[in-house]
Image 1 (spheres, one colour):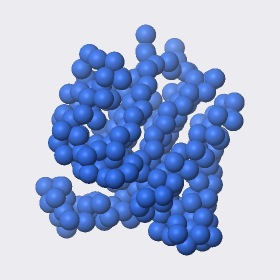
Image 2: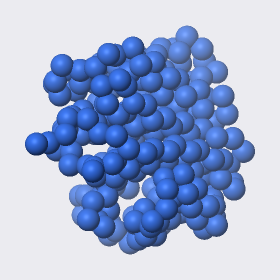
Image 3: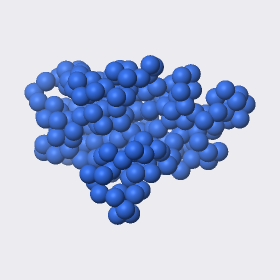
Image 4: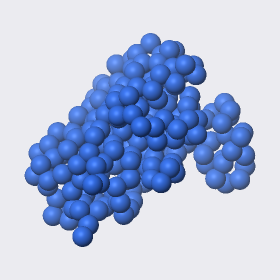
Length: 251
């Protein structure tokens, strides 16, 4: 008999890195009374007092709405809630720019992983990522919404060229850029995989091989999260470094 709820350990951390003068990332993990788990990661853009506002406000809106939910009737209601609250966040960020010119140009990436019973709802907007880990395999569940990924997927550049392309940070989508929002969202089967959400400050400074090696180590989630951040800083710390890590107990 499959479990409908999961218990486990989680950790979320955000550090400024070695280059940026402020931290525009925001991350959060929440668990409600029914055992639903929500993991959130956002990477703001637009400069000081803009990108950080966009990311923190987006995470705040989703977090407060999730706390108010007593639970979901089914995966469809969970999916509908997630779509609607992301629209609300987008409208909030976009409208502020219309009302205050000093916030013009701000936005944020957003990745969400919502575990509901044996379903995993994955939402992505921008280039923060969600990885799953099971049987010592690290799998990227999201696709970067960037100009360079478009070039890669259309065969115009190679994967090696994409890693060093001068425009690899140019987003094709983000929360707050347009009056309406389009996101990648899918419902997957959840079988107790470990989950990692992270901003590009992590995966641009730590290889997937090294991420995997840290995640499969016999350490607690706090140590693993800090090891990932330490390695990203050791390798240059070229951006803010943020992550959420979830490890379920499946006994």
